[in-house]
Image (cartoon, rainbow, N blue to C red; front, side):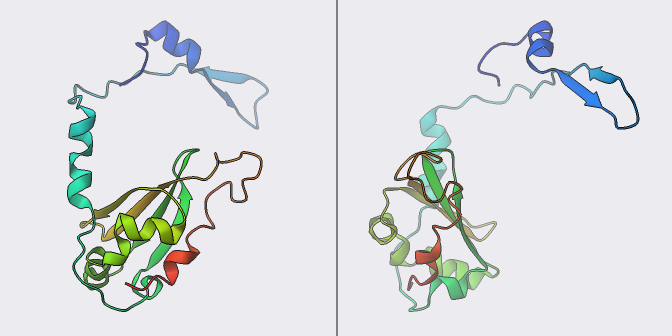
Length: 162
């Protein structure tokens, strides 16, 4: 679904495609084709976010192990210019469940540990992954931003005891 209705003429004007071939001196212009995405349901914001609440971690037990030892991947990255996200991916279900059930990853605990306002802690059982989304201190790329890609922010999570 586009924010603006596009007819074919406007679409071709906005999305011109040109090919330059190394062996040819001419530029070839290709006409883009507007493909329909179908008539999928348009949902309300509440409906779109309802599963997020159910996916949050459930505080129940501590295991005393460091997150960096249990997880296969712990990384941080930009999630737009004003948010940063932390991905924690597990190679096995046991480690994933220990992390998911740890009170150390509750929003009220992980926010102060990371020193950020946490927007949500989300779990995906199928991929054995957790995602922590936070507000950035300053917009990515602004003067004073020391990590424009958000890729160096995950270090504190490695030593987090679950």
